[in-house]
Amino acid sequence: MKNLSVLATLCMLVVATGCGKLGKSSKGSTLPNDGQLHGVAPGNRYQMAKPPGMVYIPPGTFHMGPSDEDVNYAYTARNKQVSINGFWMDATEITNNEYRQFVYWVRDSIAATLLQYGKEVDGVFVIDWPKAKTIKWDDKSTIEKVDQMMLSPESRIFGKKGINAAALIYHSETFDLKEASKRENAGKSASQFISKDDIAIYPDTLVWMRDFSYSYNEPMTKRYFAHPAYGNYPVVGVTWKQATAFAEWRTNYMNSFRESKNQVTESDFRLPTEAEWEYAARGGRSQSMFPWGGYYLRNREGCLLANFKPGRGNYPEDGGFYTVKADAYWPNDFGLYCMAGNVAEWTSSLYYEGAYNFQHDMNPDIRYNATKADPPRMKRKVIRGGSWKDAGFMLQTSARAYEYMDTAKSYIGFRCVIDLPPMGK
Image 1: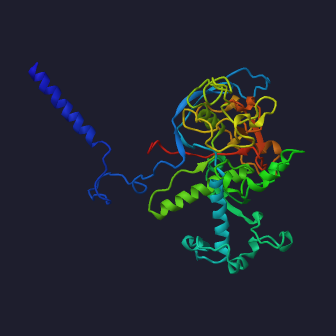
Image 2 (image 1 turned 90 degrees about the horizontal axis):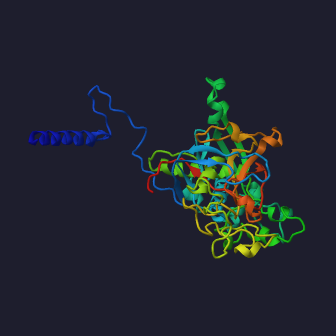
Image 3 (image 1 turned 180 degrees about the horizontal axis):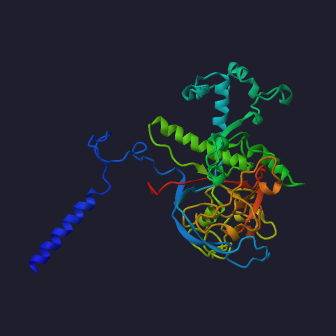
């Protein structure tokens, strides 16, 4: 027995020693010249921290589709078990302040180009950002040099100069991986899958008046995106194309910084797929009707749990007449705020009535990059979550709706996701 005990101890030491060596890389940045295979890392050591303002959504399986009877008998969302990989998601909808950072970046980049704050590198003008950040927008000489960004004289009131919102154009360049992956496209030049577009990115503030006939909403048109009181409210009046442009800019903004620090670049920020959004909204409660896990819109004390249109239209009963702050109400079990109500949210998915019937059960997704020549039917994008002007039915985690990708509304916003491991949690 004594010999067996010693033998077991020796075996444990061998296993422990072996496990300790697994996964260790060779010391130093240069590979030993010994003629053996050691591997080469694609870049520096992984150094990505927890994305600010985002929460990790762990991988899991859930039943996508109605948690209750399909009262409309539309059959556009049949119940189906699917599995979702882990990802990070914005804890709140993108706010006015966050979207304004994008707007100001576009404004400053256009102005810096006009002022020649930078230099040509391989035929591309590279902006000197430390200098661009010193632009004085209250200086008359600066205004004269960027005059083509300003309102034309006939568009000014009492001659007051201001920036023309239509001049704030973001130049988008994306690579269509889905199209490039098709077998029939094998061997084709990569240039055929690059899409370039110029997108006007300023929110359409007139939606507050356009969306509601015979209704006085001028104060929201004038103040919602411009006044600091609404800084932490969700941005609205953005189209699907503007939301995707924001995600593209956010990716480039992050990776430009990482490259400047000699760090590896990261995954792209993007809009969530319809399945990812529903999985995140449920907060790990597979069969729950609402993000808070219950079957009712009120808690035991009778308080409403989201911002929507209670009853026959008692808008202020839930604490907000229009939208509320992006972190209002309690978050769901994943730490996500306002996954029901406040503003409906864009997803990346094409709206197709029978999509659930043929989508894969692993990370289901249906996408289509519509062009201007495509019929309106192909420009429908799924929106989820319901909004401040919707009845309670639309707040269900499974409720589906759509809007056209080039249309802006006063009740639709968005949040981003990014594919990263659960580091820094």
